[in-house]
Length: 404
Image 1: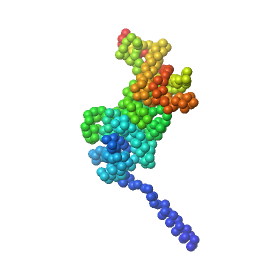
Image 2: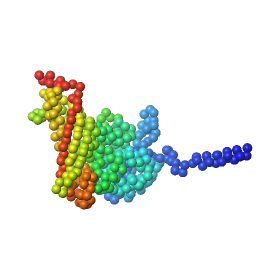
Image 3: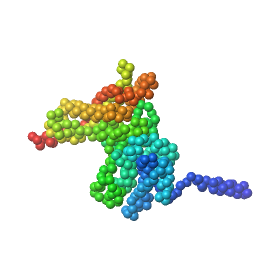
């Protein structure tokens, strides 16, 4: 009996040791940040956090009329310091493990984001699955201050919208922290980041609840273009066509819509093609001691919309004509992206250096220090092969009958 009593006491003592957690954090002590913005003013960092108001998100019947999020902002010499300084106005310590979006102001991006990435990689609270974007022609705080109608939490909307547009459109791409750091530190490839732009007047109406109660909000956010970097500094933007051409070349296009003219003679009438599969094969080689790139693009699509009254889609020559027209258009978009990257920005955002490194390692070891100069004159031969698989559930357009 005495032995049994001793065992019970030992078990109780052990359970007592297990009930504590030295690093526990109560939810009511934390401000859960879902969006973070970083800007630069002179020598100071301006850090903005989009923090969830849990009472409004959890409310069953419309909430209490308050905004579902609150933004906090502080300025300091370092990002870490500015984050801690936010406790002077927030009753809760900022918790960043659930971050969805990081927005970097364009001015800061042009100055360099190396210090930003150093902080993000050192802070152990950060996970690496949040998306990074550049605020196009504005500050990050201006992006994070806009409420969205489709989602209560704007950062969640931005996260989902970027994912969806990457899958269903083409001029955007998702970028996470590890990928960005890898491209900055690697030789032979430069980083790219999608841009986000605020559309509408530059005032505070986007931060008011009545803004999202309108049928068509006056201020909204849209992804627009891809920012090209050289090392950690942004050097410029690719427009929509160039961004699309860039993603075709990189094999990033999962699904998109392109259009081609109905015929060479008549302008204005178009035929829409849904691209559902792409593959990019980049090969490097040496010709007379000089590097060159061969880019072979394979694209599959279906015909999705026909404005052409006289085009007979039952004829193989008609399909062949459309495939050639699509090939020329995609090739032109790719060349526009190449022109901007090679001639204007002189930044190897295409990763051609890595392609040469894999195919010609001995040459790369000799030339990698001068790759920036070699890249701008690098010949790139682009071949596009488009195959149209289906013409839709009907053959000829009914427009043909209305014209007869």
